[in-house]
Image 1 (cartoon, rainbow, N blue to C red):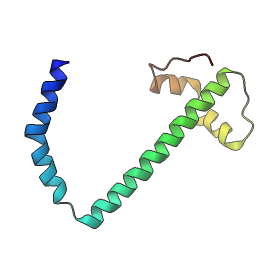
Image 2: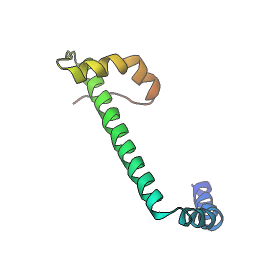
Image 3: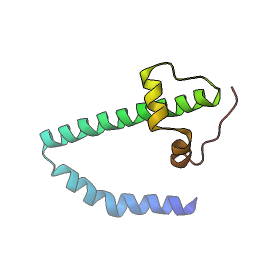
Image 4: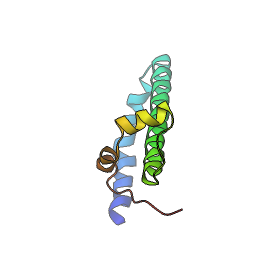
Amino acid sequence: MMFWGLGGIILLKLVYPYLSKWIEKIPYQFGKKVTTFLLVFILFDSVITFSAEFRQSQRDRGIPATNLVAQLLDYYFPNDVLDKIFQNVKAVND
């Protein structure tokens, strides 16, 4: 725990001032566009991740894919792919 506290202090005292000055140099309109793009990307990624994990739990319970989205999730995110991506995920009983 002491390591992370020391790391946080070093980050705030040494790295943050330079990073803050660099960020302030970014033009406002460009920064707004980049921020919007990153927000949309993270939301899209979160929805896909949640959907793939939810579909995996349905597959584990034996629920078949009844629509196109579920079929696409089964095709692109089968259990072996999700197990490689999320190695530490453990199923819990409802």
